[in-house]
Length: 257
Image (cartoon, rainbow, N blue to C red; front, side):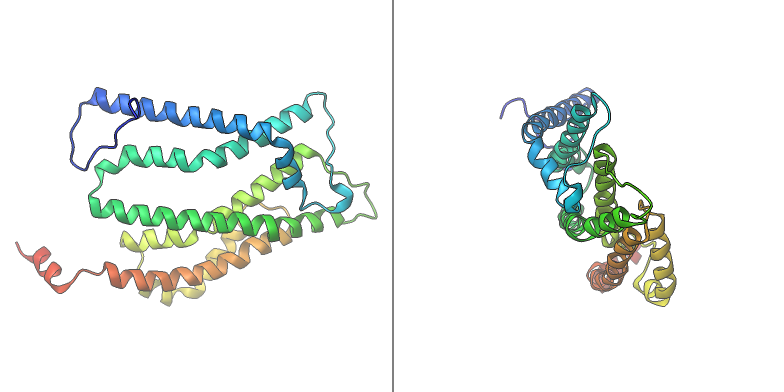
């Protein structure tokens, strides 16, 4: 389509003005996509709110609001979060299309594979958060010391907490990508990972504690998959390191003056 920026090939040279024009166009496309997505999510924000309310216990299925403008502003904010999540793949593609020409073709394929893997991990993290971690955390928090409090749930606070939990668990599930990137850059090796496995588990546990979550249940549900993903990362690193290891002929070519 005319008007859409063309993705440059590796090594293709253009002027600085053309680069800035491409960047401006891709930013405008991203903002336009976000605006269109927001129009859709706000039109269906009632379904979004019902979906977010499902992890709540039955007695809290309709959170309360306290301000005159709070219902409208809360619905706007939830719709904006949903729109950004919906359009995030498009925004990331625009960023990738702008930066990719600086990388060689082989590196572009590797990065694209990692991006696909990261997307799958993020989707798995969001699903785990919504169906497992969030209901358990909400049930624990809304039942704690219920004999001493009249417990009500404020809509704005609950939706913020739910978003934070899902974001934290989604980030947690990206651990294999982080470790594989360190191995690919040569900062870590599989030998170091295996030799310091216990230390790694301690660091992972400390990371889970540092993640957002004000209760032990949320922390536990962030820590458990993090431990499993750390172990999976070690075995993935072993497999990828063998594939990334240069062949003898390549090593001789690098060593030659």
